[in-house]
Amino acid sequence: MKMKVNAGRFRDPRRAPGAAPGWAAVPQQTGLPRDWPAVGVVIPTRDRPELLRRTLQAVRAQDYPGPLRVIVVFDQAEPDWRLADADDRAVMVLANWRQPGLAGARNTGIMALDTELVAFCDDDDVWHPAKLRRQVEALVRTPDAEFATCAVEVEFEQAVHPRLAGTGTVTVEQLSRSRMSMLHSSGFLALREALLEDGVIGPVAEDAPGSQNEDWDLLLRAARRHPIVHVDEPLVRVLWGRSSFYAYEYTTKISSLRWMMARHPEISGCRPGAARVYGQLACWSAAAGDRRQAWRWARETVRHNWREPRAAIALAAIAGAVKVETVLTALHRRGHGI
Image (cartoon, rainbow, N blue to C red):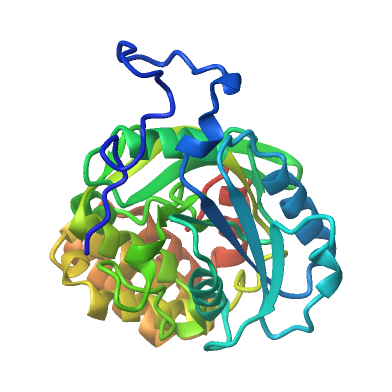
């Protein structure tokens, strides 16, 4: 059965009964916690204890007035049971019991929760204290809403760059044209029931190669149901760089992009969107040393959209004029990627 996060399900937490619409906050002493939905936070982790503790600290520091639970899922690593402090029953520690990888770890956490809403946070990212509250407010005032995102700020080499979407809703058409990298998985908030195996959106795709692009796939599936609610404020700080397990796995990047194209015909049907993906395939093929495939994908890029800049990057890399890694680092310094 479809769940609706709106005033019919629980009272708009921004307003006292009978109050006029607006942004005026209800004083906390009015008993708001019983009116806010319970949120469960799933944090997959693997061999990054210091970053994980920083992430947990930021989640615990949320100003969210409602019930908050946290599940840390250890993937392909020995769980640190000490994180589930006896004095902090809101934190649970689990081992990934599903497909090894990020997607399986997230599904493990989703299935173990009993909260109405579920949020994702990677173990190297940090939430703004108002992140959950702002997103739940946005869900509450949007009829039929099932999924919410927020903008991010990217941290790379001690520099921080905000990445905004410039919109309050996200559609399939927008996601087909662009991955919209500011919609990072650490900013996802959704109805838990919708993400279960028999849910209307379904679980995180565990067959995604290397658990890459599973977040883009989930966004597209959610947007098909209803436009995604987006809070265009940088409420998550995303750490870029070598802390990522996937930064330079070019073969996996290529496989996951081809998986996305096969899974979502909307991308192929959008010429700028297809050109963007073909351009990425050309760049990653060039970085992997496969000049033949790089040429193939570069031609497809130009055929779909000759203005696509990734074609020029790939052609320069094929010619030996520049390394893809050099371009990627330069883009990261500006808060962007290939």
